[in-house]
Image (cartoon, rainbow, N blue to C red; front, side, top):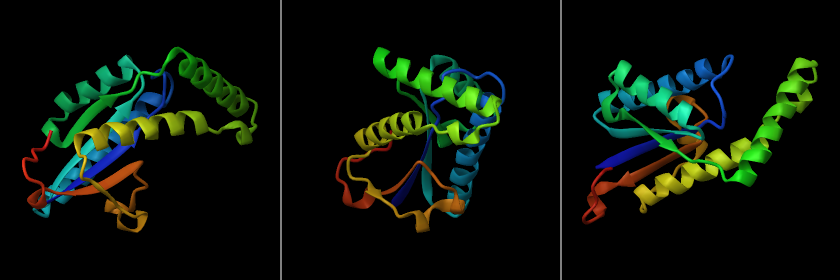
Length: 161
């Protein structure tokens, strides 16, 4: 039996403005994709990685509110002090650039790299035999931050987290 593992990383340090809505939309994308795969008799889990306790608590609230059960699991990667300074500076620069109409400043390279690396590390710790899939195979053609498949039949002693 193959298990689909989908992941999204969000590097927002707060939930101000539209950030909460964007996080909730990504939560729904994961929940929907996992539900669709499961409706096709395929095993699937979604992982939403956040970088703040406030975002983790909000996402866990949605797990309960929308009754997603184990379909979407919330992970957290707390940045080090140095990473937090860099992420805060990047987000401030982005906000100022957007506010001033300079969309070229709207780049989240550090946040994206930090979040995606943490997501990959945590998922691969849970599923050491995962096979990363090509974007052409992504469910619902969504640009997932992480997508892989675990072949449970060939893994002795494997149990899904």
